[in-house]
Image 1 (cartoon, one colour):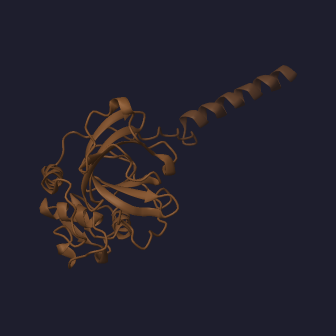
Image 2: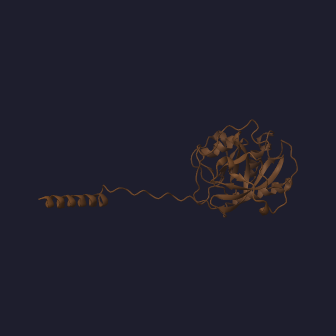
Image 3: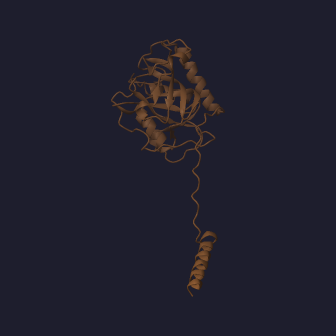
Amino acid sequence: MLRKLITMGILVVFYVSCFLLNGKAASTPTPLPVEITRKVQEHLPDQIQDLLEIAHREWTDVAGKELKRSNKYTQWLNEYDWGWCAGFVTWCTMEAGIRQVAFTDNVRGDVEGIVHLKEASVGKMITGYMRMNRVTNVPQKGFIVVYGQRGSGGAYHVGVVYDIQDLGEGRYRLTTIEGNMSNTVRMYIHDYDMNAKKAWDMKTIPQEEQKEEQTRMFSYKLQNNTWYINCFLMTWIPENEVPILSEVDVSMTPPPSVEDNQ
């Protein structure tokens, strides 16, 4: 009798297991996470290529000369005269024919195509791009790099990402072109590690790898030893998916009174 009960018990367990595995009660397997690309895109939209060529042309034409606080890069905003890094970026996007969105338009959600938030305020520029779901920590050519400063917030200065060398494992060597650096347009090359603690994610490249002469136009030195890379603003959307950052990931501490006058 005992053997019969044991046998029946085994059969019940067997049939219940089959039902759970093959029937409606079977558990749904956990899907694998989506792989996020960190690959540098080489095939750029025409307008983004134009943006890079315009920024480079202005860097070459200015040739390290000191500009007044009110200059051609600020005329679009009524001779804006208290710092013009974001004014320079916006001017270059306008010259490239990139569609401009005003901060006051309060555009929200996924915005398609090539677009720029027409602003001279770094803080408003970040906020506008966040509304459009266009903020990331993966750099691409033609993106806008946003710098923060330790102790002063994450909306301090911006520039155009001109070139990128992928060093692997989330590390990149960035070439940027930036307005209002020592009152001129300058090019910088430095290393960025997206996996490092944000406040320390920029480094000077090793001395033995510095091939160019440093001048008033060009430097390997960090713009400021207290600066870090806060995020990148996506003027265009790469073919492959890139991670979108939320307010939790982006430093939104209020900028100083003169947010980009360096």
